[in-house]
Image (cartoon, rainbow, N blue to C red; front, side):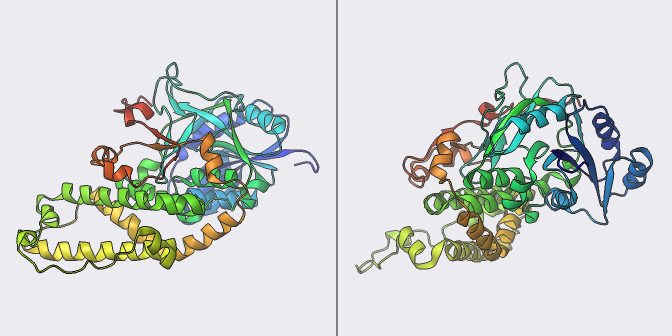
Length: 439
């Protein structure tokens, strides 16, 4: 690339995805001139399908980077970003087919954007171009996120206007200024995949920068073609663990203290529901081991003083309080399992195991996450209340039991007063049940 000229680097990861690259790289070769110098970098992410040899033989212009193991989406893109020479990084999924004017549209939006615009999100549609994959992204109160109107016909889907602000870009079709990417901390490699773009977008906004839309930068996507190789419940673990990481890292001090009880309550309620769904004998967990004791006459005694949640937070801090909560959960589950052993109770529901694994590994990384949280909050220039005025949090019943929990007065009492919150059903957020794929 010529010195002094603006330039972009297109980053593509591939894990056993040669058949996808055959289409993706051909579409990149057919791109209309974007008006800047540009390069293509491909990471062969531990593939066993001959990807590296094929790229070398068929696409000599591509800068091929090889990894002996699958680094995941996050660490893999970080590695390509470090090797890239462009002023801007353009991330593209390998199972996507960009339209001929895709890169030129992103570059035009980048070069005309205000200096505080750190990232630009393109539009993603399905392979046939009839349904939406990504236009808007919305965040939930517990760190999850949705692609608004995912799989809805384009004629009925909500699509942002050019230059409209977004909460976060989608990692499968986005441009980010290289400097902003690294100053915000790049992708968190612990995520491996999923919600890393939500995490990055939140850090960009809290750091005083913005994310905007470029709906004319269109790619066609075979949704989940690569991620299906991970398996449904492996992905479920990543979603749950990464949602906890995202919430813990990014909510500012005020909102984290206020929302933490609702986040943990929701997580634990889902664990209980899924454990009970996995084995009828799990109902033992809900059996009162001392039935009728409450009715027995007892001598009156003064009540023991109990700490309020605020007092516990003040005494222990959110990190230690979360650690104690997870330890208590582990002890209770162990007691429940031991008490039910005679009836053959086992935790074997795959979603329940995914949730328990997510909670366990989140706990293992709690101190590391607290260190990252400190860095993120130290560079904060914009409070969450200001961000939520633009992008309110969503509350969407997603798992079995959510609808009942979210409708209860008890759950309502856990939510902070005045919190901008959009209550919606899954069918209002996306096309649900999902239509059969015609990719």
